[in-house]
Image (cartoon, rainbow, N blue to C red; front, top):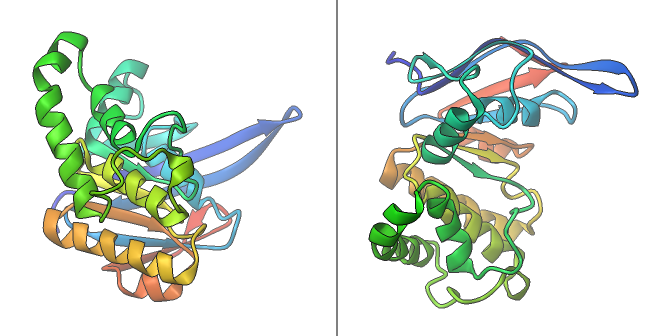
Length: 231
């Protein structure tokens, strides 16, 4: 087996509420390899979303390590972690997290602008816009570029979020219940987009889901319980 694209080693994470520390991850080992699609299953409170946040460098572990292509990244300075997160890790959340004042195209472009210094952006913005348009067209939103989130359906908003996650050509996409807020028909359409992207781009995916049918389509299923990976 090749070196993992992204991995957690002995990761511990807890949160403090009312002066009390609540453990969430209790020494988790996890890895995803290049081109692999991994389903992460478990009951609510098992630690799935917390693991995704730590893997994606949104939250630091209390102890343990996060490695990207074999290199520890969890203890880098904040700015370096942010740069890695924006360039190499894409996120798709259940509730989209789009900026309501921006159009679909602008929401996708924002992900690219955050990677680029102002002068460099002046040189690159035309190519970035062309890629953002291509991505939105690839998810079926070529005629909705100038619509704001409030003018889009839930499925369309999630498609914008998927395009945004792809703008930087990441190594891995972390998707937290990407269809959990959608009706069954729209969810099926969004899932087909994710699987098509995986086939065409070869990007690794970690999908948090309660959907057993979806999990069965992935290369591997990882189950969590009480802050631990089982098996």
